[in-house]
Length: 128
Image 1 (cartoon, rainbow, N blue to C red):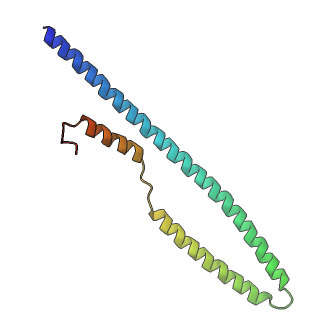
Image 2: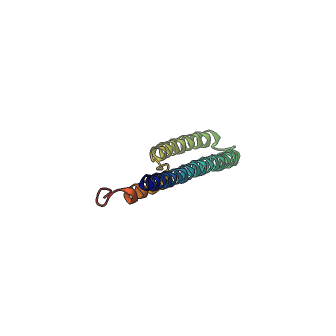
Image 3: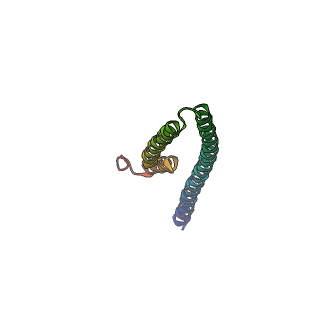
C-alpha cells in the first residue's frame, strides 16, 4: 500500500513536470509568433513609407529633368526616363521575387528547445 502511494505521488509529480514543460514551450511558441507578426507589420510599414518617399522623389526628379530640357530635347528625355524607370522596376521586381523565396525558419527557438528536451528525457544513447 505504501509503495503504490509513493508510486502514485511520483507519477503525479512527473505528470506535473511534463505539463509545466509543455506549458513553457507553448508560451515560447506564442511569444515567437507575436514577435514574427510585429516584425512583419513593422517591415510593411517601413516599406510603405519608403516607397512613398522614393516615388515622390522620382516624380520630382523627372519633372526637374524634363523642365531642364524642355526647349531642346524634351521627347528623348521623357523616353529615356521612361525606359530607365521600366528597367529599374523590372530589376526591383526580380529582387523582390528572389527575396520572397528565402524563408525565415519560423519557431526555430521553440524547435531547438523541444529538441533539447527530447534529448534530456531520452534514455542514454537513444536521443543521440
